[in-house]
Length: 514
Ligand SMILES: [Zn+2]
Image 1 (cartoon, rainbow, N blue to C red):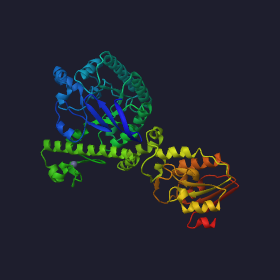
Image 2: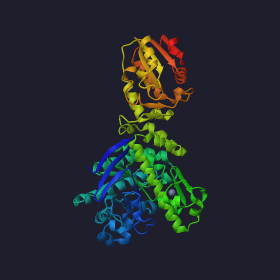
Image 3: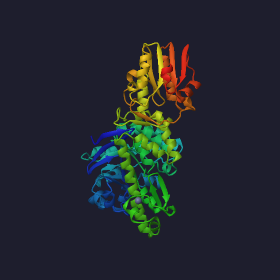
Image 4: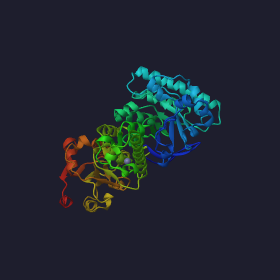
């Protein structure tokens, strides 16, 4: 196996991709290195822990030709770790077409001993009509087939060949493209050129594209082209991208843009440098701004690389701790368009598959979107299978003491209502029968104690379904509900049909009055 996963959370994966020149820990940011004019020393990239770089095979071919074939790409760019080569698709995106056959560029990528190679693709970018996008997808598929035929005909290669998935916002084309490349035998997939989407912060469209690809290709590693913004990284990783490349560190620097964990600013507008990287520690904002152009660009690019490094490591740590959902949720507050994308997570059922069944730490429920955490959706499904023969039920708010059966409240309820089915309720998880109140995360969650007094049923549809299903699949003659603010809101909005329905407001000592 060239890709081994050791930890996962949502669809983010800590793993190792093995290449002929070494392994890459995922999720990995792969900085773009220019084969001719690289402004930041490649040694510096290595020092920062970037294990792989990506460069452009087309430019290398044009510039070095046979010299590159003799020396190999590692010597050309002075990097002895894994090197990925993009075939020239980006140039196609810029200039419409390039003057080479797919098999020629594939042979060249092989000759220069690239570790991770991409066939010549025809990027769909964003905003093309369906017909044009479909034509581009078909062309990329033909190129990819031609490339793979060539590669298979001369074996002895350990390089990883990456299937370029195109189709952009036309999701059925993305699905078709990914399916065909998978069937052809590509070991890794790359999502083509969402640069325009990212430049306009169209994170929601990007999220749907990644989710479509990931639901089609669950296990193979996925690369995302052109993702080098600190806000894009956690989103892309959470949705299933294992590696991503970008030249953003230098492109932003040339544009005088200073990266933050939550976005970018024009350097000229900064009064303070909050970053702790060696560059920012060594000078004030004013001094940074007044550096000579070339020096400022390189220093700014280095700073940007520190921010990207920090982002990738933070995301990895969040995966290790099972806190990727919380991490993305925090990031989502940095930009409304990222929040829009985060809200789509509730539609992506596949996020449950790689989220561990048990985590060492309790999960946090803070606001309504958290009802869609994979852990919550999964446990609701389990709880919904519960059946009882008892004819009476007491519903009581989940207690601070976990599990519920260890609480004083349960102790009193069970004495008083020995022939009742006793259930706790939790806005994020639903109805919790006492018999299964200690499984994860029923007894392992922390809820913010804000007042749930408005729009309960509108904001918590999963709770409404959980309650209705529980009551309709079991047959109770008598229903007793101790209703907190949240439950009162629910009961106002939905119909509970029972001859013997009794609702009592939750308050201190309420059990003694029952
Ligand atoms: Zn800095």
